[in-house]
Amino acid sequence: MSDTVRYTLSDEEMPTAWYNIVPDLPAPPPPPLHPGTHEPIGPDDLAPLFPMDLIMQEVSQDQYVDIPGEVLDVYRLWRATPLHRARRLEKALGTPAKIYYKYEGVSPAGSHKPNTAVPQAYYNAKAGVKKLTTETGAGQWGTALSFACAQFGIECEIWQVRASYDQKPYRRAMMEAFGGTVHPSPSDVTNYGRQLLAENPDNPGSLGIAITEAVEVAAQDPNIRYALGSVLNHVLMHQTVIGEEAILQMAKAGDTPDLIVGCTGGGSNFAGLAFPFLREKLAGRMNPIIRAVEPASCPSLTKGVYTYDFGDTGGMTPLVKMHTLGHDFIPDPIHAGGLRYHGMAPLISHIYDLGLIEASSKPQSECFAAGVQFARTEGIVPAPEPTHALAVAIEEALACKESGEEKVILTALCGHGMLDMAAYTAYFEGQLEDYDYPEAKVAEAMANIPQV
Image (cartoon, rainbow, N blue to C red; front, side, top):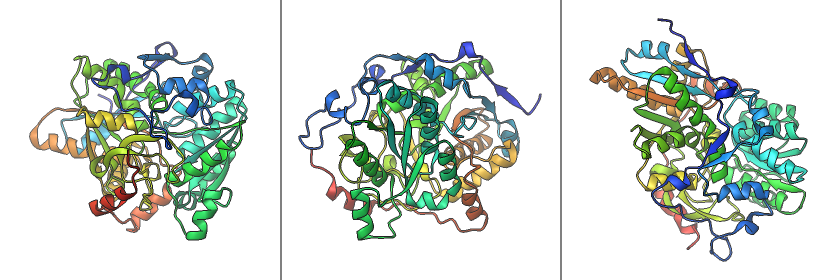
């Protein structure tokens, strides 16, 4: 049998609706709260930041939401994405396990992020919005939104976490190639950024800080809205095209996953793959273990506290109940920039609290070792973020080698690492440091959590 096994879908087989997991859950998620009154927010409270179509998706109780034809037309530039069986990796590991990966790196941005960037740009353009502001860490989200805005003729302004802005200059160039305007965060463009730079000119930034800056600019102009690349319900819902395709592709492969594993920062990639499979599990049609993997240096699920907190550092966003390390958390500048967020998506936090998924964390040196092994066997250099899931997939496959169990493992390879080679260079030169976030720091951060 050939070592190359790839499963695709025709245009006719592509999903035409996003899946909303909320109505299928055994208990509803806690509502977001107004930052001033601590009362549940309504659609009007979100109107300064988001168009009404996205606000209604955020609170939707519909199990499925139709994907607009204009969005599907752009999706077809790269969707459906392939599902691969990693036979060469399996052979190198000597494992009886089967390893499958859903590869999102074939998108124009090189990651899964356009799955939500395209509909967000579409709905904003439909509402007459002229510009979108946003934050980005490693740059995948900023790249995706720049691309999406170009498709619908609107401007895009991005605040990139300073540590990543300095580490990844080609990400910035890619955003600019698609038409985006990029600032290092904290920046001298906003009041909040100037305040932080006055306190510490060498501030490395965080996603929470960048969010505050982007929200500050959007809130001041009725022609500008804000777009978020992870965390919110509608963002996670847009990503479910990944899992819906994977279910059809796994059926073509004749296999059902025993373990589904995905990296988690804000949670959109993990939710995109896992939620459609969790629907099948809740309905009794399959029974996979579903595991989220996060960096040991930013362990919101495994060490964070499940409580109401701000989504940004400056306290401008609604309060959401999530696993959080504290909204003023400044992460260690690890190379998986897309996973350096202080909180986990409220919906994933709720599902984890219900006991429907598992969570673990990995240090970055082990993750890069997994990424290199994957590159040398499968021929794709992964982005630093999905190497966290690959490390667990390899660990589980080696456990199967010891036990003789023929487990089926499915993971999401959410992006390629072709613009992250500085991180791989640091790994090869022995310059990467592992950082295990201490629980004492979490306890200290909880002193600043809003009392709800």
